Length: 331
Image (cartoon, rainbow, N blue to C red; front, side, top):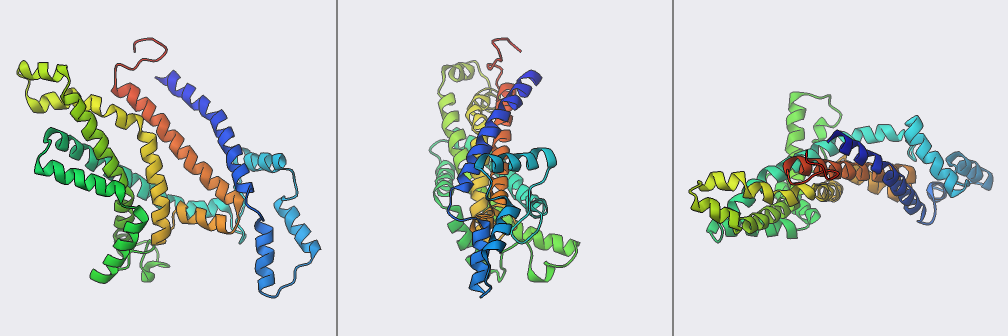
């Protein structure tokens, strides 16, 4: 198992290089750059900027260098120096990322735990009680979670919370706690603001996971080995838990990377709608300001998270399903 993990980590290196190249190429495609945006903003304020100043600014950002030189400098600064550059307003990118990463991780992990903790038991119950009223209700909720856009639900939740509860779930804290030091009252206020993005981010994953678990478990419950086990008198709860459930969870484990991708993508849109200090709004802001160094760094963070989730799914699947073997050798 250890050798397999090391091999998978080594295969991620060329993939990371390829993705970083594609990412840098894509963020270089839009017309204009950070200097042209800054010049336009200054001229809109009736501040004249001469060509000498523009050339100096472009040299400061290294925009006149060749594409390969800019890419290598970007990768070198990230990998070797740990320098993620600075934003348009002069702040260090690492400081900006450290402000948004904690809330991004909290919302993402909480949504993942909530989706798996709810969807797997509901999917098992729905499959073992097929065509019951509970099955119809769970199936309807699963389709509703899959079909309703997260950003639209975020707008509805924000409006309903303001109209019925007189509480604005925007941002991460109320106005009176924004500049206040961390305290028990501020922690409670933060929790009040976090439940909405966590639930809204988890809803599509809950719906999809319920469908996967239910359909695969129904397929396993019709197999001959289940019929034989029932004929031998094995009790239904033990039978379902010991054999069909384990096999039915295999597709869910193999698609763990896609599950994480859905949470990452949904969290970005919901963060923009609710004004959360997470990576999604920061990515949008960096793209609007054409701060491509910061935008590319965020995209690489997203890709690395999804790759690690894919690696975790492969390892968990090999550990969970004894039929899977590495290099043709039983382990």
